[in-house]
Amino acid sequence: MSSTTRGRPFIAPLITAALGAFFAPFLSGCDTGDVKPGAEGLLSLVTEPSAVESATWAIDPYDADKRYRGTLFLASKPYGGDDVYIQLYLDNIKDEDAGVRAAALRGLGNHGRPEQAQVVAESLKDKDPIVRREAGRALQRLHYPKVVPDLLRVVPEKSEQDADVRREAAAALGQYPDPRVLQPLIAALGEDTSLAVQQAARTSMRTLTGQDFGFDRRQWLDWLSATKEPFAARLAYMYPAFNRDKVWYEYLPFVPPPPNEASASPAGSSPSIGAEQ
Image (cartoon, rainbow, N blue to C red; front, top):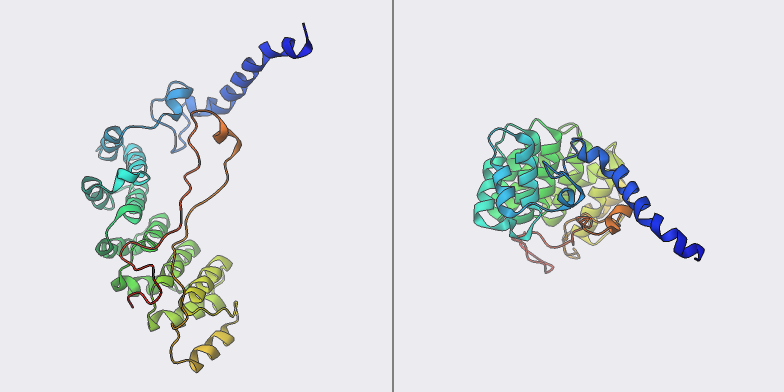
């Protein structure tokens, strides 16, 4: 018998042991937010809940964790834009649990109508920064010019302490060729203490104007004072999207791939240059 043949019986037990060691914490009751409740084995661990099961979780009056998981799962699915689920998101943004509110905002960002952006914008005032971040992210995906003042309110560091909220708001403003957004974005790219906020403001300014003076606030201001049509060369706005490579266990059978997205134009906007101002 060859060494290769002799080694084969040991391969399956080794893989099984490795998988068992990796997933043991999940199966022993560790709450990660991504594991199917009640999972009793590897197959049930990675099997997705049905739409009915997710909706049932999303309205569970006794378990905020289930409401969070059910809402988030529906928000991630193409059918999550059905009218019944849109109403569920609108109901759940009022939930007492911050995680549920954030998941509901994810659903509205992924599937909502432009006019629902005003409801989303109210969540920029939420006491929980995670909820405010999701509101800013959702407003990148819904085009509704009436929310510009809401976004401008949270871009200055003196108004919003959480840098991630400021970053999401600065990124969302890149879709609005409105003179009101230019000075606050220039101030953010030159003065904010967070490099991520500065970069988001710079990207929005580049999209809005077609210019790029880096992080040089003075150059931006000089250019702005010298031009009569700051939006003449603007570029099409595409909202930022999540994307990453697979980690090792996502190459295994039955394990879902990473939830990557494609960047696109916000709902309610025209992808062409010179869209509504």
